[in-house]
Image (cartoon, rainbow, N blue to C red; front, side, top):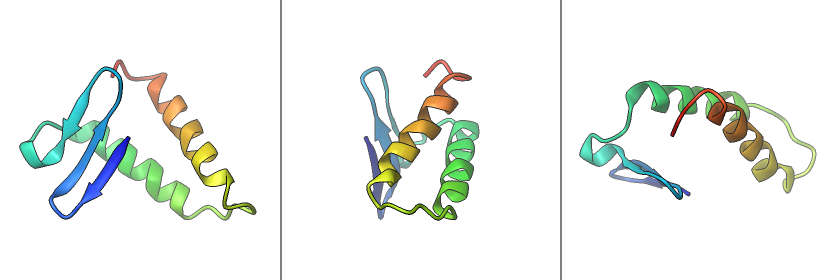
Length: 68
């Protein structure tokens, strides 16, 4: 789950919780995720319902090269 707040970005999964407000986010991971979201945001998808499925695909690909 990803949270976008005025105080910053945080995310949580089964194994880890990260929060940039407390300096806990690995900046390289954050920059990779941010770049992926930027590319994704510029994509034109025909169906609104495809957005989360596409985002899950991005997350799955990034997970292959990370241990978190």
